[in-house]
Image 1 (spheres, helix red, strand yellow):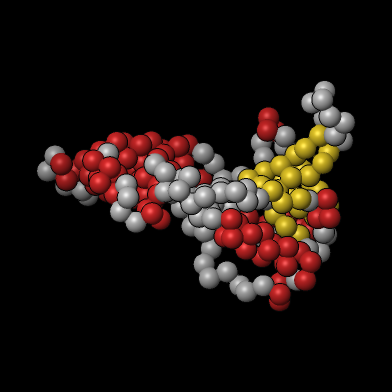
Image 2 (spheres, rainbow, N blue to C red):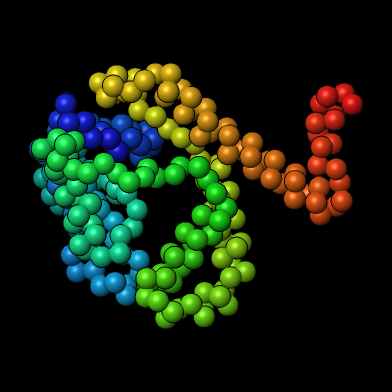
Length: 219
């Protein structure tokens, strides 16, 4: 999802079979917040942005709805409300009205990050409830490892998409940087995963980890 304050547009980036790329006026966007969201019911909810559309496949109402989840699951309603307020102030008042992000979300796949993710999604409360489910999480650690590796594999099998050129241009996105990010995010994770698997295999079987270099170098 991309917000452009200059064009007053909100862009949805999705594959064609999920609705394709859509552009909506900022003024038509509504935020859906799960207000009645106790912390003990999992790690929280997600911010949903929705808009009424002319396209409608529901015979029981005279308008359609298009929407998308935005960001990561949050711990409570106030967290989600703050997230939405940050977006609203940026679009209404400008970039100077909101603090700069302390850090950007890391998009590089990581096996440890995947295992942490599935461990938080598996049981009510995550680690936010202290030690309530810590003993059970430790007992299920082998399952989390397998699940986390599957999660990591799914990230490797996905691909980094990008907006159409027209949207990139009005957003001021560099074409060179767009291509570099596309290549890096789609190929580099496969390369460092292959290197990691080879190093592990060489260590387990007592092989020289430099064998591929010697083979390619003709030595």
